Image 1 (cartoon, rainbow, N blue to C red):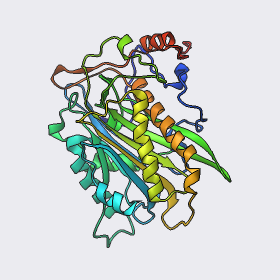
Image 2 (image 1 turned 90 degrees about the vertical axis):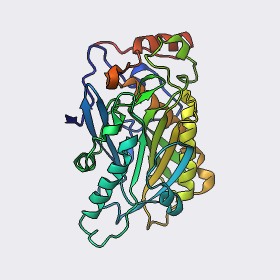
Image 3 (image 1 turned 180 degrees about the vertical axis):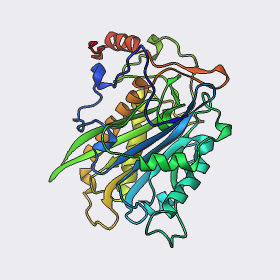
Length: 359
């Protein structure tokens, strides 16, 4: 069965960080507090769900709604730890350009998804003579809940994730590439956030989207609350995180790689262990086309660096707070982070937090 929306949260309502009064950082958010606040950026999900053994999917991030191969954008890459399968990484690093959407999925599906992404690009009008494509596909391992060996994702799933990509609100939690992921032993998933940044001569927007699947000890606004929460069903020390950062600020590829590096640093704010087995990657892109000569000065980058740290921190929290309990392969279960206990632990540490009033 396929679906494009997150599952029914059941009796316990799920809330984003700001709904709980948890406000990471100091910068203002964009209107939707999502990567799609960056003008032109689109996100699409395709989820494959079978309660017994499949919880996986595809999440596509598009820099614009045109032919990305013909209208490329500048991009940068940072590898926090390289235990992963980031298809297309070397050309992305070498040329500093995106020529396809960024697509996220599960580990063993990355290669079929990359092939499907190549087919999608070759089939676009205007690409009839294309002989080389660099598909950019990232992954994290959803094998605790999903039978990755089956590699259930098809070209149709990939095409639907791209063709259904839209601006506006982004589904979070157990959706798309986050359907089967875990974070700190709790159910993880997709999360997003954005920041508005004052720059000389105007305002820029920066947005982040994460596929959270890593271990460590959860911290909320610096508070070490992990030990005060009920023990999750699984102790998780390893795992990975894919981070996508978008901005409408005119940056070159070197500057975007610097921005991506700060995005990886942002995982430390929530307690990431950066373990041996963790593939921690960030891809940052500017929506400015490659042909543009616009670029801001290096000494103006600091506000964008701060925005990346804040947006990644909040994206991870949103991925956890919006995820729902999921049962899967071999009887495994990933429990949703219990929000009432989380709020109580935060308050004991002086972090303002509250459960929203029920309607």
